[in-house]
Length: 443
Length: 142
View: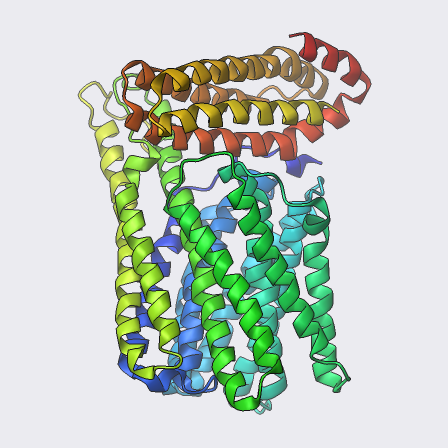
C-alpha cells in the first residue's frame, strides 16, 4: 500500500535532463553517419551502416529519452519508489551511452571486442533499469490501465534486450552461434512494437486527453491494446519459429491494430477542446499520420512481389522510426523539458523566503519559445519528406541526411537553451541583492 | 465514489479553463475575462473542498499529516499563485502573457490532478469507505 503514497519523489533535474540532452547528440551521430555513407547505407537492412544507424537512433535517441522520462515519471505519477535516483540515473545513462557507442562501432567494423563491451554495458544498463522499474511496479497497489500498460511495455523492452544480447553474443566470437535470421526478425518486431510503440500507446492514453483536452480513448482499447499486441507478437514469433501456416496473418493484424490506434488518436486530436496549438501538437499529429502510413505500407510490403517488398519495407521502417517514434518523442520533450525547468525553479524559489515575492519566474513558453520549436518542426517535416523521396531516388539521400543533421542540431540547441536558462535563473535567485548569503543552495 | 465526484469536478474546471484560453487566443478579452473568473471560482471551490473537507478527514484517519496531503496543499499554493498571475495578465490586457502563462498553469494543474486521481483519491476511497456518503454530501453542498 505504502508505495502509492510517495507523492514527493521527483528526482533532481539533472537526472532526466542528462538523458534528454544526450539524445540529440546520438541523432547527430546517426545523421552524420548517413551523410558520410550515402546511398549505400540503406541498400540492405543487413548492411553495417544500416545496423549502426538503426541502433544509434533506437537506443541513443528513442530509448535514451524514454528511460530518462520514465525515471522522472514513474516515481511522481505512478508511485514507484526509486531509492537512489541520482545514482541510478548516472549509471543507466552512462552505460546506455557507452553501450550504444560500442554497439555502433562494432557494426562499423571495430571487431568482436566492441560487441562484447556492448553486451556487457547494455545488459547492465538496461537490465538494471528494468530491474528497478519492474520491482517498483510490482509493489504498486493501484492497478490502473496505465500501470498495466507500463508493465507490458517494460516486458517488451526486456524481451528485446534479451534477444539483442543473444545476437550480440553471436557477434562476440565466444563460441555461440549467430542465429541471425530468426532472432533478428523477432528482436526487431519486439523492439519496435512491443517496446517503442507500446510505450507510446500507454503514454498517449494518459497525455493526449490531458494536454489537449480531448475525449478519453475507449476503455476497451486502453485495457486490451497491450495484451492484444503481445498475443499477436507471440503468435508471430511462434509461427516464425516453428514454420506454422498463416505466419503472415498476425503481421497483418498488427498493422491493422496500429492503423486503428493512429486513426483514433488523430480523431481525438481533431476533437480537442483546447484550441491553442503548439509545436508539440504538430509533432503528435505528424507522428500519428506517419504511424498510419507505416502500417499501411508495411502491410502492402507483405503482400507485394519480393522486389517491391524491400523498397516498401524500407519506407515503412523509416516512417515508423523517424516519422512516428521520433516525432512523438520530440513533441513530448517540448512539453516535459520546459515544465520540469519551471517546476524546479519554482521549488528553488519557494525555499528562499526573503526573495520569493521579488522574482517573477519565466513561464514555459518563454523558456522554450514557440517560434524556435515551430522552426524545428518544419525542418523535421522537410527532413522526413526528403528522406522518403530518397527511397526511390537514392541521389536525395545525402541532402536528406543534411536536413536530419540540422533537425537534430536545432532540437539540441532548443533543449540546451532551456537548460542554460535554468542555470541563469538559478543564479538570479541565488544572487538577488535581498538573498541571504548561505541560503540552502542544493539543486 | 469520492474519486468519481472529484475527478468529474476536475473535468468541469478544465472545461472552464479551455473556454477562457480559447477566448484569449481569439483575442476576445471580455469573454476571456468572464470565463476566467468562472474558472477561478470553480477551481478555488475545488481546492477548498479538498483542504477543508477531504484532507483533514484523511489525515485524521490515516495519521499522515506530513504525507501526500502536505504535497497536495503545497501544489495548491503553486496553482493559486499562477491563477493570480493569469488574472493580472487579463486585467493588464496582456493576452500574449496570458497565453504564455496558461500553458504553464494547464500542465501544473494536469500533473497535479493526475497524482490525485491515480493515487490520493483511490487511497481516500479505501481509507474512508465508511464515511464516503457523508463526505460526498458535504462536498456537494459546499
